[in-house]
Amino acid sequence: MIDSTVIGISSPALGGYSWLSVAAVPQFREGEDGPFQVITMFSDVTALKLESVLFDEVQSLANIGGWHHEFCRDRMYGSRELYRLLDLPGETQLNRDNVYALFVPDDRERMRKSMDAARARNEAFDLELRVVTMSGQRRWLRVIGQPQMQRGVVESVIGTAQDITARKRQEEQLRRQALTDPLTGLSNRDALMRQLALAVDEAQPGSGPALLYVDLDRFKVINDLLGHAAGDGLLVAAAQRLRRAVGAETLLARFGGDEFMAMIAPCPGEHTSREMALRITEAFAEPFPHSGEEFTITASVGIAQYPQDGATIQQLINHADAAMFDAKRRGRNNWQAFTPALARKLTDRLLIETQLRRALDNQEFYLRYQPQVDLVSGKVTAAEALIRWRNRMLGELAPDLFISHAENTGDIVRIGAWVIREACRQLRAWRDAGIAVPRVAVNVSYRQFLSDNLPEVVAAALHDHGLQGACLELEMTERVLVEDVPDTLEIFKAIKQLGVSLVIDDFGEGYSALNYLRRLPFDGLKISHHFMQGIPAMPTDTAICEAIIRIAQSLGMVVIAEGVELETQREFLVRQGTTLAQGYLFSRPIAPDELVDFVRLHGCAD
Image (cartoon, rainbow, N blue to C red; front, side):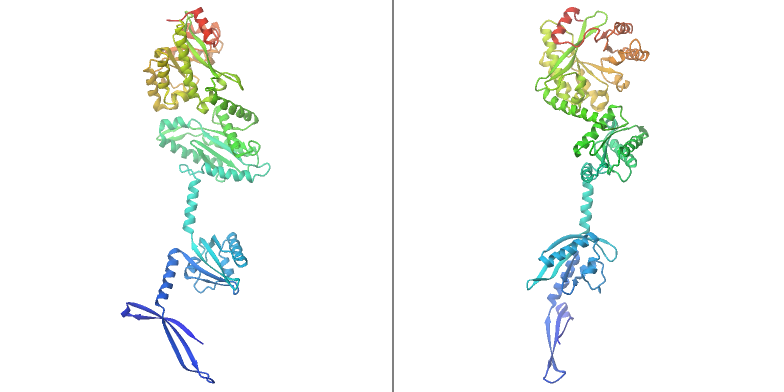
């Protein structure tokens, strides 16, 4: 029997240890039991020993352990680093069962199948598996196995196990960041879309996912007034209220800007989503504190449920969005569920918006003009340009049927610029024909006002047709006054420098912020036809009109009444000292050549 061992010898002359492999070989004579001599062989294995130590150190630094599994004896051999990775005592004898027991159940089965495939079909494997070590720590291991064949049979598998826990944690952190809104900490749009797709795929009859589309009412106004930093703070506070309202188990995402989306999956019935929508609106009952002040923000909520309210994900989102806009149309601070009637409105809206994009290029718009008259002399003081649309598919459309759609799509900017140019062109044509209409009035949308180039559009239209600024009057609703406060004054100043008149249309129907009347250079107020309809029968409408007239007179502004249809209404205005009006009592909106006849009959004011 040959005995061997490795010994270390201190060798100061060589500057350290030398390692020797010592093998003892006994020599026997025939017939004798004991050896008559022992031949000892020494081999310098210092280099091999250093390589072994280096290998162990490298494994430790790289968190990689080596292993070798023999199928015939069900024995597994592991390096020192493998034992450390698994928190195993050094004396532990490894085998298939006690190693597999450390894997979590799902990954244990993957490892078993991979080893079986390696033995049966000589297949190598590369897996990322989870283990629970002997000390209870959870780790991720990358396990690589390579079958070893002898005489055409796989007798063993040799491989490595690397600790990749840190990498997996970093990947998970990046994954969460990719699916999380950085401002509010809620899920983001991508996360919602992924979960919604899963919920739709797994939906059972009668319990498909429900979407609640939440939009903060008038948040943009507050954001512009307070600044973006304060706006972000309010968004965070709003997200916290929403989270409390929907509960921790409901997916809640920031969908973009001041829009949020909650998903109930599965949703057993409409009562569940409606109760949640009510909780959301109630969550905004209390004002939001900011820098010692309080600001009220409410929420409008739209509900749509799969599959009855949308057969596809995008359709479901569109219909929840449509329901939310219906809630805003009904006064904000409420919720609405999607209905077949809304579906028809949505179809009509899509058709109108599609046709709108081509209407200007196809020359489908035209203008009608309603005279403004002096109530004392009956002479024409101006003509208001009113847009009409004639489409081959939709027929004849009045402004109230398409202007809001043009504002939503942004087409109103191009359309509005065309109206200004066309009105100026028509005024030039009248004057060239000897019809001295003093000026034309044009309505300006808030979207057109905020487009930043309105003064340039007005200046170009006046210049191209040889008109002075006094020939043009721009009318805008009170919405313009609060949409973008920082730029409003500069835009108004630029328009006023052209000599153009500025009038607030439908005064009293919107925000009626009297502070703007003091700060901004308006020339007049226009009384809404809604208030004029109640005169003289409705005391409240009469009182409102009287108040508007007094406000304008005290500020030195002109008052124009629209929607005058009765002689008693004209008499009321004259008594109040108002001399300018328009309405069916004098003329409906008429074509340019009809206005020529009207002017020839009644004359024009100087």
